[in-house]
Image (cartoon, rainbow, N blue to C red; front, side, top):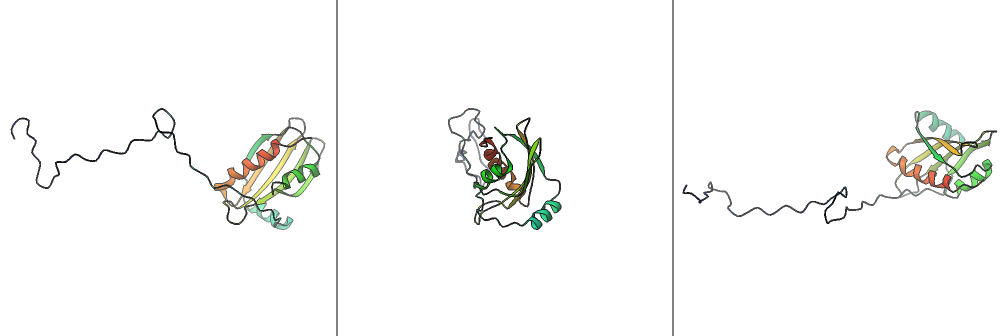
Length: 161
């Protein structure tokens, strides 16, 4: 081929390729495009108490060790007050009691029909001296456990002694 002349093999298209779409900066490290916001399906809890003590205990024993979490609490009211506060968010108490250094709760929640989620169980030790809540969470829907934890943690943040 002569200098400055580009020859193409038979069947090759000499027209330039379509430029690629601009890259979107998903991490926010610069660029003009804002990162897209991905909407996550909300977890809506059922207002119906559909778990018996027997079924709670059976699920608790069969669902393994669970996941440990800790959060703060502004105060530690009596168990009955905590029970009522959590039930206002469709998180129900299956058993609770006040001990000298803590209030212990066994709680559950279930996803409402049509919502993401499953059944969630928790043992909560609300510590009087440290104003913390040590929680063991168990579920049949591990992918949605964080959604339940965020709801539970928010309710504990509202507690007043």
